[in-house]
Image 1 (cartoon, helix red, strand yellow):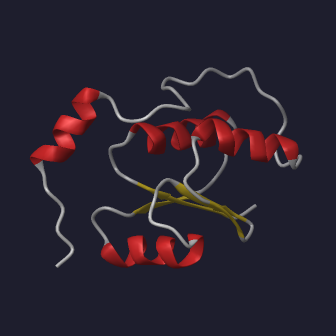
Image 2 (cartoon, rainbow, N blue to C red):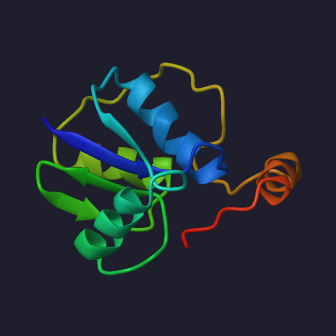
Length: 111
């Protein structure tokens, strides 16, 4: 299975996707959409929209998706088996107030 995850370095939703990848011991490419403009542009082109996270699994783009939704897709398509392995972060939640403060302290400019 080839997985490309278009993620922010610091984000509740992105961390939820990473947690699901760890839970199921899946190899994936963690693509930084904040610090590399070309990665963000690729995500928008492939997904047809600007919101993240986006996860591409074997050519199928799951746009603006939570870790919980990624796991549901993987299970529904028999790509993984159900697992009771614990995750250390919420898989269906946005950024915490602390994460928002960190992001606000470091503005991102693509120009």
